[in-house]
Every structure is written in structure tokens, then in C-alpha cells.
Image (tube, rainbow, N blue to C red):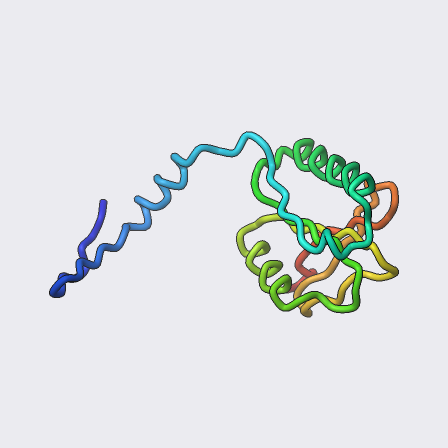
Amino acid sequence: MLLITSIEVGILRIVAMPMTMKILNFLKPKPSQPTIESYGQTGSGLELVQIQPIMEWLFASLLNAGYYGKSHIIWYNGDQLEPSLEQMLKKAMRRGEPVFLYRCGSRVSPLPEAYCWRMMGEYPSMRMYQLEVRDGE
């Protein structure tokens, strides 16, 4: 059901009712496999033959967890996250999309106070982290 909120000369303003949007989202086809957006891969210092098994492991982990949506991986080899990446992290967390960091250097990136990196002990090299909201936030 659509609601016409106002008609002005040359402008017709239509607002979708919240229930209609929920129905439309429900009817969207679910992805058959996860997608992983990659950030910082070219500056990571890793070769493609090193990156391939990491991506395969992450993809298999997402499938094993039953997650078929969008996720993100940051190849981190620096001191600070770029501001655009910080914005992406916040947006992804609001959407419930998992964010991972592969530490290419000696330490992980600092984050805004509300977030932290949790080391994923399941990954053999101890360089894979998942972004989480700090307890009590």
C-alpha cells in the first residue's frame, strides 16, 4: 500500500508504508552464497597465492555458519584505518554484516571506542580478526 503525502505542481511525493517495505524485503531472493568485499588488498604486501587460501577459508567459514549475505575483509598493513574504511565499518555493523581484518603487519588498527577486534582462534596463523561491539556498548 502506498500513501500519497502531497501533490505539488510537477511533484508527486509518495511514501511507502513500513509494512509494504517489509513484504518487499521478504520477497527479495536470498543470495545462494556469501559475498566478501575486499579492502586494502593491493597495499597489503601479500601475493595472490597467499591471499587465495585466506579467502577460501573465510568463504568456507561463512558457509559453515549458514551466512549467505555480504561481508567485508580488510587487509591491514599500516598504522591507521582510512576514514572511508571507518565509515564502512560503522555502516556494515549497523546492517549486521560481518567485518574481518587480516593483519599483514605487526599490529591491528585502532578503532572507535565502541568497537574492538576479536582474534579468530579458528584461523591457524592468528592474524584473522572479527569486528565486534564492545561489551556494555
